[in-house]
Image 1 (cartoon, rainbow, N blue to C red):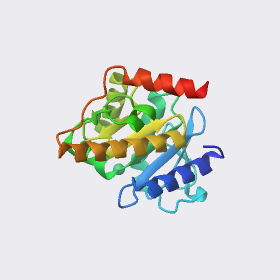
Image 2 (cartoon, protein in one colour; image 1 turned 45 degrees about the horizontal axis):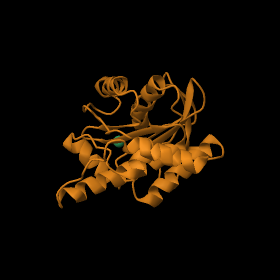
Image 3 (tube, rainbow, N blue to C red; image 1 turned 180 degrees about the vertical axis):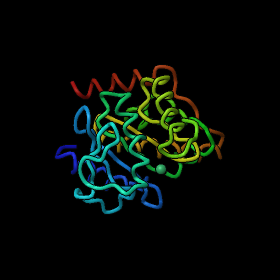
Image 4 (cartoon, rainbow, N blue to C red; image 1 turned 135 degrees about the vertical axis):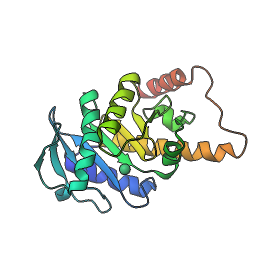
Length: 216
Ligand SMILES: [Zn+2]
C-alpha cells in the first residue's frame, strides 16, 4: 500500500471493516513502524479512523507525539514486543475477528488449510499464546516466547482474547487478517461436514512455483 504511514493505517482499518473481520465493537489497534525506535499507533477504537488520531510511540513505551488514553497504554507493549523481536516487521494489527477469536478462546492453534492463508504469509498453523491480562508481563512474555519458538509465524492467537498479526506493511498484515479469519470460519464450518483436510505434501512449494511463474 503506497502513501504516508498514517494513510496506510487509515486505509488498512477501512479495508478490515469493509471485509467484516473486525471486532464487533470496533475495538482494534493497528501500528506501522516509523524507524528502529518508533511506531505509529491507533487509539483503542478505529471505526472512522482519521490520521490526526494516531500517536507516535517509542519502542520503550513512551508516547512521543499525540495522545493515547491510559487504557491504550496497555496495548503499546503488545506491539513493541513484536517490533523488538522481529526487525523486519513493518506493521501490526490486533483485533477480535470473531472466528479467529473462537480458536483463541478454545486454545486451539489455527491450522493452515486454505489457499489464502498459504499464499498471504502464514503457511503454518497460528500458535496460541497463553492468557495474561492485556499488556501485562505475563502476556508480553508469552508473546515473546512464542515468537522465539516459532521464528517464521506471522500471527499469534492470544488465548481468551483475540488475534495479533504482523507483516512487512499494513496492507500485507491486513490481507493476512482477512485470510486468517476466512480460514477460521471455514474450519468451523467444515467441522460440521466431516472436518477440514490438510493440504497434500508439497503444497507450499507448488504455490511458490506458481507465483514465480506468474511473476516471471
Ligand atoms: Zn484486544
